[in-house]
Image: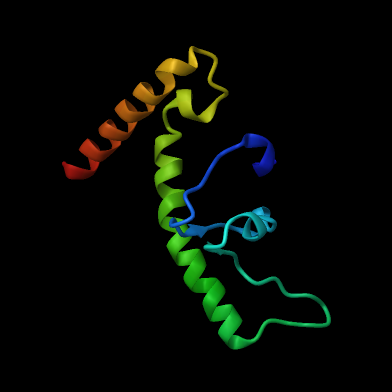
Length: 102
């Protein structure tokens, strides 16, 4: 699905993703994914700590995305002109940042 979206990521940017993006590390060198356990190979303590650290970094972004999705225009399929989506997204982000500063 990520390949089909044709989203391009700068190679200098570090990507922290969840296990839903397993193939992303083949497309992008600086991708951090949590380790998965199997029945035969349980995770070591170090791998569990690493996964917890990744989750704590990712949760900050997930919370911001959830706050932005309070605006229905971002939680539903966008049905207006694509040309204006960037402007509307920036306005919603500005409202969110303003709420944080109060």
